[in-house]
Image (cartoon, rainbow, N blue to C red; front, side, top):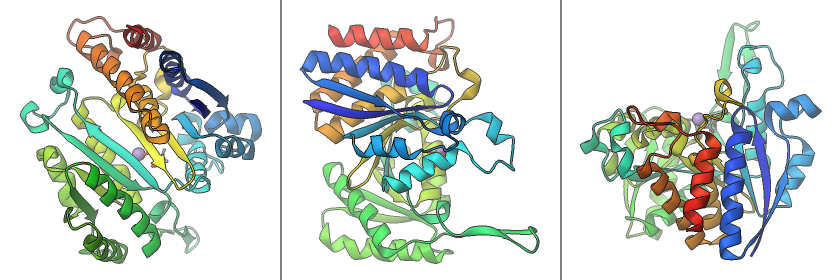
Length: 355
Ligand code: IPM
Ligand code: MN
């Protein structure tokens, strides 16, 4: 198979972790007789610097012309510390999501047996956790009307959802639940928010189409608590954009490191794969960034965009091996263990895949 991938490395540690994902994917392609065609394109602070736009039209064209997009990270402290900056790297990410119509953000949370003691949560609570968030990604408060009034002394952001937007995300949730343990949780705040009541109403109306799926409706504050108390009571969770943003950061604690969790953002025509961690600018260029989340995102890409299950599994197996052998970056090093650099971890995975 010929795989045409747009490669958006972005900022901070983005280029380093992307580099390892490319190395590993190329070896997979070699082993299974595929050809990879990578087309690099600018995003984030790097794109602002070069052309004054965090998601340039040229980049959009490259994404549209590719079968999938592999993305590193976006963000730079120069902009974080300047509230008056009119153009910000993060706007590029939001523009990209909107323009590629990537409405469903798939964020799995799972544990690795060899890392159970890395989580700050008690081992017996997190053991066996295997859940997936489906976060709505192109609506809600992220894209609603916002502004200032009263001479700048009042600010507002609005959360708007249409039934259609909720329905297409919910359908993906039901379908995913059918391939797993047929359990779906709709996370909302329907006791307060009108938009949440529309979420609940829309999901309830779909229940008849999926009689085998058991649906629970839970308030977001309660889910925030249960998620760390009984994470393995959940399977597929669907939720709106901001709730999903917050809960998926919380959920990443279960796995032991943010450097481990991959994600997919799906639309009807395009798909983008990225680690859930950010650009970690303090670590940029030091060779200490954990490449595993990006490498696991590449595995998701092979499986979800191209149906290459065996290839994806081969990457996962190599990742499991590196974790159990302790060939890991600083964030995962056990007491007194040696830590390996970003590229050493990539090199180890390549060796494991080849054997
Ligand atoms: C994420 C990030 C982004 C978001 C930021 C960088 C805009 O936190 O992908 O979760 O809030 O969606
Ligand atoms: Mn986030």
